[in-house]
Figure (tube, rainbow, N blue to C red):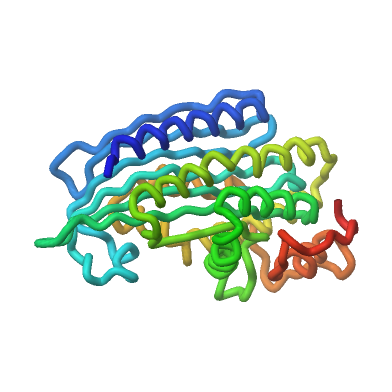
Length: 308
């Protein structure tokens, strides 16, 4: 096992994604390197790359972190109780992009490796990852393209299970509502050992720009007004609810003493909530709920051409 190999790949992935997003936006990302000194609850380093108020992206954060801790947090041991109390190491890249234009969807990617050293036992390594799309105005062409790239990245044999896991995970149970149109997701993955897990991480990370950039290029020039921005802000509230109530990555970061500024960079910059609001029937806003925020076989079903 070579943590150094994974670290080098993740830093290169971060730079490649940032470069691709800069080409789409036209503005440069800021860099914020950080370090945790040895001896504390958590030690390690990271690099936060972010763009605020860009031409295309209202907020974009592409984060690398590599930390070691004395005790695995509860969110990481729920499925591995035998590792409770074990020291751990975690490294990964996580990104969330919130565009200005409501016709451009929000997107999330995370790829990570974790290892733990139980007392008296051999090291245990596992992997997690996934990417998912959260549109405000749905387009079948975008959803199908995103899922096609996801399927190629993880392979046809894994895609059905990883898509199902994504649909199950990115679901607001208290609302009985999906967060978006999904993608792929896996957690606690050990199949294929180190080489297999690392290869899966690389395949998904390398596919991100292919999955997202064409959608941005297709939609960023669409005209929008106050109505569309208002609906975008309302739907962003669901994103906040999921991240704060259900997201295991947020919980892991906060429970392990992670860097709060980096963890909460995933939040959208402007959000609204309303009491018992619902869109008017037969509007584009209503069709997000009826046509997109429900399980669909995006990879195989025929498009209706209703929303291209």
